[in-house]
Image (cartoon, rainbow, N blue to C red; front, side, top):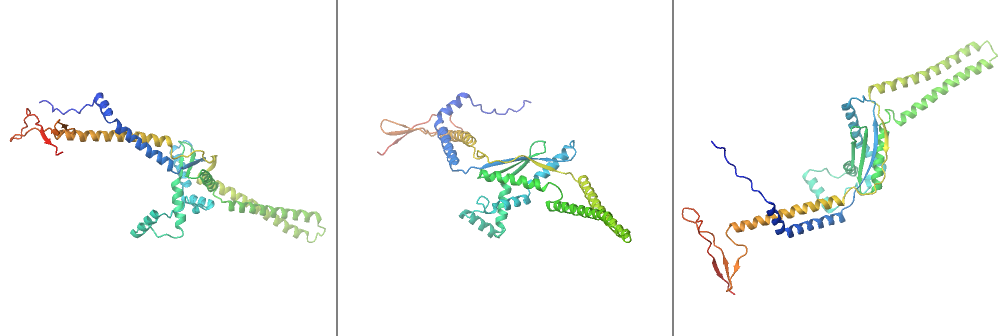
Length: 357
C-alpha cells in the first residue's frame, strides 16, 4: 500500500518576492515613516531616566570551596540590601517622602482610579502613613541589587529623573548596609564597652596607687597592717574585675565568630552622578520602530494582496473596462450546471451597462 501523499507547501520564489516589493513599496515606506515619526515624538516628549550604580564586596568567612553556601550567603545579603528597613532609613534620611518623584500624584485620572479602587474594596482608605508607604513602594521599584557573577561583589543601582539624586540614594543605601553589617554590637554598645573598660582600668590603677602611696608614706605601725590589708584587697578586687570583664568580652567574641559567619562589607566603587540617561536610548527606539514599521508595512501589503485575490476569485474585475460608447464591460462568472459541475469550457460573457449620463 502506497503511503499517503500530503500536499506540498507553496513555494514563494524570489521573483514573486521582488514583484510584491515593487507593488507594495509605497505602502511599506509610508508605514515605516509613520512609525519613525511616532518614535521621534516619543523621544522628544519622554522624561529621561538616569541610573547610578555602586559596587561593594561582601567578604565572608564561609568555606570558599562550598559554592552553594557562598551563593546562599551573598543572595541573603542582596535581600538585606533590598529590604524595607533600609528603604525606610534612606527615605527618612534624604526626605524622599516629600519629593515629587516619590509622592502620590494628585492627577484627575489617578484620583478617579483610587476612588474606584476604594469603592470596590481593592484599596485601603488614604491615611497619614500612606505617603511613606507609597514612597517605599516607589523606592523599591527603582532600587536593584544583584550579584556580579560568581563573586562576592554586589552591584547596587537606582533609577531617578535626577542624576544627583540617584547617586546620593545609592551611596546612602551602601552606607546603611555596611553600618548594619559591621558587628553584632551596635555603636552604642561599643561605646558602653569602651567606657566600662576605661572605668575598671581607672579603678584598678587608683587602688594600686593608693596602696603604694600608703606603704611609702605610713609611719604608724599600729594600724598599718589592717589598713594595708584593706588596700591590698581593694586593689586585687579592682584588678580582678578588669581582667574578668576583658576575658568575658574575648569569650563572647569567639563564640559569636564560631556560631555565625562574620561579614566584612566594604565599598569597592561609590556612585557618581551619571552623565547620560539610561532610558530612552535613541538608537534602540529608532531601530525597533524601523523594524516594526517594515514588518507592519509588509503585513499591510500582504493583506491588500489577499483582498485583491478575493475580489478576483469572486469573478469581478477590480478594473472594469469602459467602451467607446460609454458602456462599462464586466465579466460574468461561469455558468453552473444543475448537477453542480462547472462548465470549464464556458467563457465569461460581458454585460454591457449603459451609463445614464
